[in-house]
Image (spheres, rainbow, N blue to C red):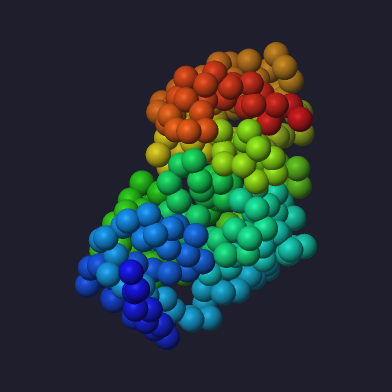
Length: 266
């Protein structure tokens, strides 16, 4: 089946085109092209934009802004993005990273979307054609394009050195599909106790989710084996892990506390 591809000069114009129904946005194509190849008959055309606002990386004034069209490979090469490069490198193999975009990863259903897990931990802002959204709200409503429009960029505050952590667990390394992924920003005070924690999980629901119970349990704790015991015990609270060809829901629930402990203590 052949599909027409139309390129628009701006994000707002392509957002308007998507409201007509049947069209899908084509970024790197790792998700939408595969869906069509596997029989998605709901797609009648592809649309894209060459809006320059979607293709740059800016690091200034303590914040990072990454365009939605920027690929995982570009992030992995960017020395200024050292804290988040491991999350970009965790997305597929070299061929996939050369195509997969930041915007596309935000929409990837579990067990994909590892980079979105990192963005959730970083409390990113998602800049859309229809306005800005915090990433928690965006992920909760990401299937609705009506008012939001397409994603233009994401931005986040650069975390304190050593406070951001990311871990992907897979059966095949280095490019296997996730059993689960974890990301966290852990801030500690002068006494070594946790002053703030933001924890995100992948594959423990149909999209990246916060581990709110574990965040609360870590408050005031020390990052020691004894100090993290309560947080590790509640890390699975509220999760609905998926069962797929990679792992069962039971297995994901069983190994989550183990890897969460490693994330905190490594």
